[in-house]
Amino acid sequence: MEASVRSLAALIPTDFTIGVATAAFQIEGATTEDGRGASVWDVFSATPGNIVDGHSPEVACDHYHRMPEDVALIRELGAASYRFSLSWPRIQPDGMGAPNQAGLDFYDRLIDELLAAGISPMVTLFHWDTPQALQDKGGWMNRDTAYRLASFASIAAEAYGDRVARWVTINEPATVSTNGYALGLHAPGETLRLGALPSVHNQLLGHGLSVQALRGLGAVGEIGLSNVYSPMVPASDTILDKLSAALLDTFQNRLLADPVLLGKYPDLIQLMGRFSDFSPSAEDMALISQPLDFYGLNYYLPTRIEAGVGESAVPAGMAEALGDDLSDSIPGAPFHLTDWPGVPITAYGWPIVPEYLRVALTELAERYPDMPPVIITEGGASFDDQPAMSPNGDGAVVADIRRIDYLEKHLRVALAATAAGGPAEAIDLRGYYVWSLMDNFEWSAGYNQPFGLVHVDFKTLKRTPKQSYYWLKDVLAARSESGAPRDDALALVDPTDSQ
Ligand code: IFM
Image 1 (cartoon, rainbow, N blue to C red):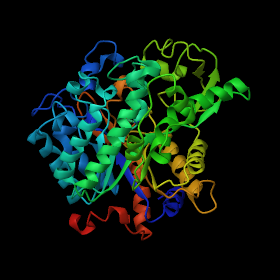
Image 2: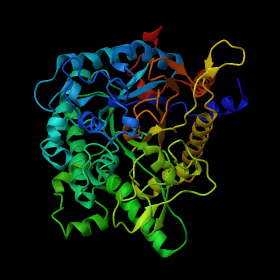
Image 3: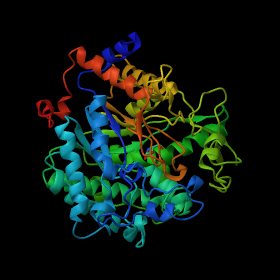
Image 4: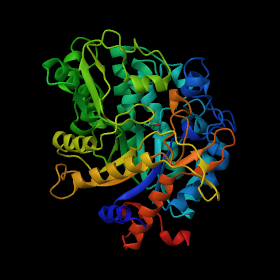
């Protein structure tokens, strides 16, 4: 075992969870089986031009039929926890009313399979697959959808509340509102620009009501939500670039984090509310900001911003990956995102600058003094490394060295920043979930952005663990060799069950 693996393992605190993550729509397939209803993503994906290369999510990784094989991969890896999402329309085909038993049964089997393998389930209630029937009534622009999510949370609590160690109510509401309701890059494909603001509030309200529902029904697990956070970096020292960065910081980071952690929207948003009818009630804000057991941070990249109207709303590399003409994605916006000269990028074109995870954690520590424990609920990178025959000819290897480098550096940065004496020591960091267990349907980018520790051949559906999988397995093995006890928060899983 390499010295760097041992030294990384030695840095990981005993109560720190290393897990792997996925989401239902990205891996399950079986989109019309066993009574599943349609989600906004089924409808959006079926519209020509919305998904790069016309890729279809109908089969995806076929996880619905191969679930035991996938759980075995997690067990072999040695990860303590698996974060997955419940497909809302598989359980509630129309987003309301009585649950579909076959849908409930699937997650019942998954949770039992995980527990039997000694893996702790972390369940996301909403990872973007709004039932189309609710979208037909306005989706997240309609306040009622928040109450529908809370009813869904109650169904989940009753079915699985005794066996789930951690709950994430909603995943990346910023992405849903920005890409889905403001820019039309994601389902449901609305282009409401700033008019998308109510979709933010309604999702956060859905979060608050779901926390209440889970707690009210006695769910035993910890409860939080996952917000994506990207440090905003002005392209220069000019006042206009700095203002642009501050503006995007407000709309992408603070807009979602302040209400949850401070109980109020950023001043700029409140100011804007004076010119529209956006003025949330004190009752809503209290629901949204009720104390959480953990705060989920999805961290991938910093964002570099330049003032002025640019050619593209997204950096060139990413626009190319998405394959769309995004040149008018933010028409009239006074700034644009720009590439980072001299910095390595992922297949998406996302800049790789691990030090910015320290910046993110430090900013969070400074902004939110009452921060609950933090879990990095997603982190990872897309690289398109393909299987090749090993030099000794005994099997296929996927040499995703860049992913190993990404994960190792980001883990080291996060652990150092939050250790005693680190700039973000106020943050009690409890875990890191790698996005993703396996290559999957990367939303509008189709199957073109592989994030997995496990390669999936989307023709044969064969799974091939990549080098990063074996690397992480070594890190986890080195950790347990050094006698690190299991994470207390995951004590719901009795390790002896798997023996
Ligand atoms: O694949 C997505 C995931 O669904 C949400 N967070 C970002 C990932 C990579 O783009």
